[in-house]
Amino acid sequence: MYFCDGKFMQTALIKQIKQLFLKELKMELKNKYALWSLVLLLVVSVFIIYTIQKQASDMVWHSLFYVVLIFGVVQNIGRSFLMENKGSLLYYKFLVDSRAIIVSKIAYQFLVNAFFLTVLCVLMNFWLPQSIPHFWQYMITALLFTLCNSAVFTFNSALALGAKNSSLVAMILSLPLLIPSLLVSLKSASKALSPLDTSVFFQDWLVLMLLLIIQLVLSVVLFKYVWTE
Image 1: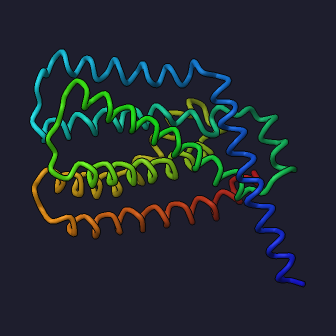
Image 2 (image 1 turned 135 degrees about the horizontal axis):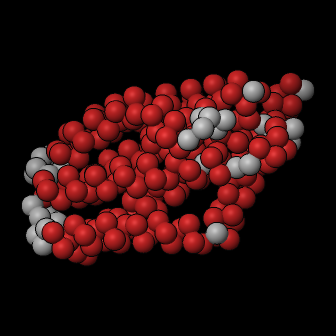
């Protein structure tokens, strides 16, 4: 009987996560100006880089890519809890599990960041073609980095929800947690610039995944106490 109850609760939790994620996606599609403003930000940023730097070596391309990527990820902080009004959050408090809320927010934030990463990659390769030996390993590293960012920024935006200048507070809270994944990501991405064996990336990817797991577990566990407040 306890097994059946646990299985039912798990199924209900997954259903809540799915519904909340789809709700976030529908809201984004309704407010298309926010999505297109993100694309416009990328186009303008990469075009300015192109007008200044007509050609770029792989190292310069790598540096510019991560500068724009980090800038864009920080700009996406407001797409999680900071866009919710207190009435909606109070409604969710009595309706759904706190774990479903934080997991759906992280998943949606990752979707937005993955879209940002894809568009950035296309634009950078269009205006500044690169010749990175291990390009796909480079992109996998960047994808893991954006996933770590999604967990960090989503949870910290929940912590900063009631503060003044909440976007700034969320960014300041996220910086200490962002640095480890950033350093590992830059180390792994730098390896992709050299014609090394592909096996050298697995250790860095493992570290990034461990950081991600730690961030996810802490977000889910600690958000329960934040949510009760």
